[in-house]
Image (cartoon, rainbow, N blue to C red):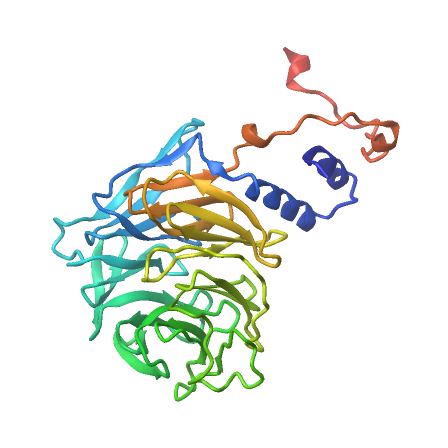
Length: 400
C-alpha cells in the first residue's frame, strides 16, 4: 500500500490512527539516507565515542570525544529555512578545568529533564553535570577505567547509575546520596556494557569480556537472575559455563517494551534474547564487523513494524529488521570508524558519530521518497468521505 492509498483509508476510517502513524514511520525509516537539508556543526577536534539525544523534547544532542571534550547541539530547526545546521549551544572543551583528563567513553542525558547529564571515561570518573552552568554537580571516582554507564529511563524508586569498567563487577552509584551503594559480582573479567530494562526498574543487563550476558535484579545483588546461553541449554542458571557470544559482549539494547534484548559481540554476531526466559531467539543477522573492542552503541526504533536495529559497523551504519534479521539498509557517509548512533523517534531521523569527528544526520526528506499520485478509480472513490453540503469549502485560492 502506498502513501496515497494509506491516507485515503485513514480519512475514510478504514485504518486507525495508531496503525497509520506506525505505517508512515516505518516507510520513512526504510527510506533513510544522508540528509540533504540538515547537518551538524563540526566542532569536535577528535573522534567521537558517544552521543545521546534527550527524550523530553528530542531537541538536544550530547556528544563526547576522544580528547575528553563534550558538546551539546540543538537539532530542532526553528530557522524557518529548509536548509539547517544544528549549532553547538554548549561545550566543555580542553580549556575547561572540569573537563575529563582522557577519553570520554559514554554520555547520557538525565531521563526526566535536560537540566542534567552524565559522562564517564578513561580517567575513571563518572561526572554529573549541571547543563545550565556546565559545571560538575558530583563526581564518582572508581578503581578502574570506565567503559560505559547507564541510568534507568523509567525508575521511580531509585536514582541508581550502573557503571561498567575494567573491574570484573558492576558498580551502582546513587545520585541521591552521592555514594556507591553496592556491587554486582558474577563476571570474571572486565564489564564492557550495562543497560537498565525499560519495563522493570530494578532489572539490569551486563555484558563482559568473559563472553557472558547476565540479567540482574539489583534488589538481590548476591547472584544474577539469568545467564544467557547462545545454545539454549536447559539450565541457563549455570553461570560459569553458559556464554552468550564466542567473544566479548560489548553492546546491548532493550526493545521499548523490555520483552527482548539485543546483544552484539566481538565474534561479529548479533543476538536477540527473550528477557523473561533468557532464550536465544535464533534470529540470523549474518556477520557484523565491529572494529572496537570497547562498548558498541546500538539503537532500536520505536513504534514501527517491524522494529529496526541500527548497528555501527566499520565506516557504516547497518539497518536490520529485529524479528527477521533481514538487512534493510547500509548507511554510507562517514570517512572513518562509526562508533555510535541514536534514533530520534519524533522526526524519524538517525544521528551517528564516528572517528572522523563528524556527526551525520540520516533522514527521509519528503521530496526524496514522495510517490506519484494514484489514479482514483470508482471503487477507490467510495473511500473518500462525502462532503457535507453545509460545509464551508472556501479556500485561499478562490480569494486570490
